[in-house]
Length: 119
Image (cartoon, rainbow, N blue to C red; front, side, top):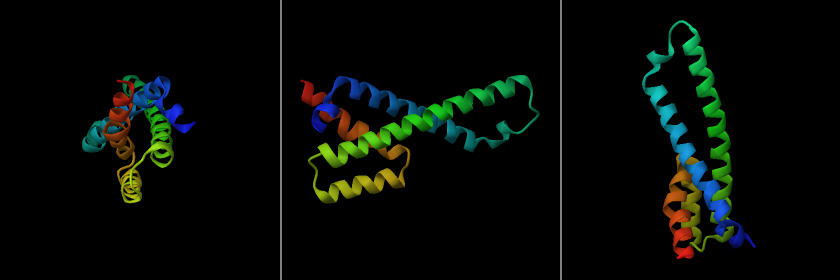
């Protein structure tokens, strides 16, 4: 049953969207952390609108990151045929590199195996 759920085209589209959106939000957060002086200043209307926009992007990013984390963790535990040591290593990477760990898993394990299964 779990294999069918994770092998579906709809699940692949959802996880792909979540992976790319999580990467986008992570890049925006890193850029904002690298250039904090861009965040300081008077609150004019354009800055306020930009703050609202980044807030919405961040909320969507948090949701997509959570969906991807739960999906890739469930795939790792239920579907993956890796050894126990490999699974523990991936779980550690999920936690240590949050939110990038599940994106790496998607592109390294889930995506290529999904593509190979459809060929």
